[in-house]
Image (cartoon, rainbow, N blue to C red):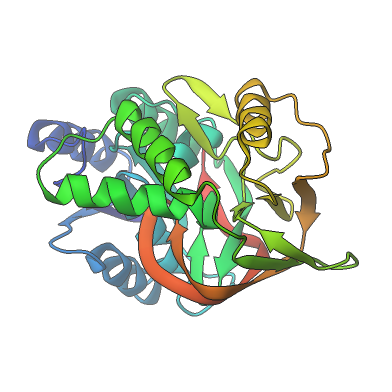
Length: 305
């Protein structure tokens, strides 16, 4: 079996020693080549080249952003039967997709899982989400979450260490800035009336879609990696509504409410904005958008797990 190991050397928990140990362990089971990413977008290029060269499995060691790039590279010609399998060895600070798929957060244990799965031919076919032309593995969003991602990326660019506390602090700051402002988005879902007063929209491909430390955050508990998209939106940022929504997604006890919009297993959703709004995909800030079409892509990738 031919395999390519893509390593992001700048990921939070990736080291040269760990990379070498990972490569040594895998090379005992597969014919392995190793590639290090050099810049943003490089992982996607490496994965696309692997998809065209007959590689059987692409193993990615990095964070959620690197996993997203690899998924997009593998899928650059759409769903097809000869796309290489994907295996993930967590190397970031959060590793949402890997954890949602049951992959151990410890890179050594995750490598053992991959080796055992390859030997047993254990593969899981999963869906992906797509936001316009960009695939996502666990979540995309417009509004508050994307504004938080943008703020965190600015801090990281200044050399700050990323942490859950930083995400929470920036989320609170972005909420305070948005509080009192009019809604900017409309949300269209199949078979429903258009929601014309949304302040934020999350679109999930898995559950949970993020973690606060070890605590899973659930906006759509019925969303699965083999089903459609989970949609979560708020039509009010008044403090009582925000507190109820925050408590619900942390405890997992979600119920309906006049300011909360939830839908599960949806094939598509369209968000239109009255003005450009911050947009993120799998935790990467992608600028501002005035409209985004979200679609579910069933049976998109084969995951070694």
